[in-house]
Image 1 (cartoon, rainbow, N blue to C red):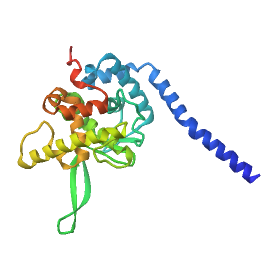
Image 2: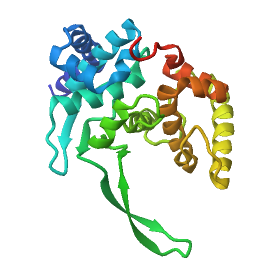
Image 3: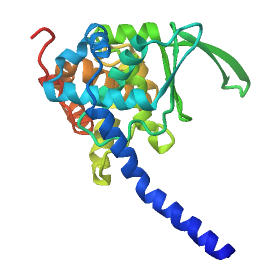
Length: 277
C-alpha cells in the first residue's frame, strides 16, 4: 500500500509539472483577452506618453501584458506612499515595454515592486583598500534585487515616464536588470534565445563598454550615462534606457550596439512615429 501511495503521488506530481505551464498560459491568455479598463487607459494616456509612440499592434500587446503583470505582481508602498492604480499602471506600462514581441514569462523571479515617494537611502558595508569595512549611505532612485523585488522611487518613475527622449528611465533600467538576473545573477548578458548569439553580443558589448569606461575616465561626454561604466550589468541597463528613449541617436552613433539591442528586444524604436503624429 505505501508503495502504491507513493507511486500515485509521483504520478500526480508529474502530471502537475507537465500541466502547470499550460494552465498558467491559459490563465494569462484569458487576462490578455479582457477589455482594457478605461480607468487604466486614461492613466496610461496621461502618465506614459511613450505609449502613444507605439504602433497599434504593439499598443494592444502592451495593454495585454500590463493586465497579466498587474494580476501577478504585488505592489507595496514604502515611506508613507499609498499604492493606487496611478502608481501600478504607470510602473507596469514602463516595465512591459521590455517584453513586447518576445516570448516572456513576465519576469518570473519577480514577485513584488516596492515604491518609495522619492529617492531612498540604503546602507552598505564597503571594503576599503586597507581591508577595513566602511559603512556607506547612498540615495537611490531604483534597485533590482535577485530575491524577487524591484525598488523604485515614484518621483523618478513619474519623471522617467513623462520625459520620453532624455535616455533616462529608472523603471526601464531596473527591469532590464530583472531580465539580466533571471539566471540568478547580473552580468550584462541576459538570455538571448540561442547560445550562438553570445559571441557577437559579447564582442559588441565589451567594445562599447570599454569605450564608455575610457570616456568616463577622461570626463568625455557620451550618449550614455557614465554610471554604465561601473560594470557590464549596469552598462546593459543604461544602454537599454537609451535604446528605448533615444533610439535614433543610438542607431546613428552606435549602430552595432543598437542592432544587438533591437534583435534582443525585438522592437525597433527608431521607426516609431513621433508623439502627436
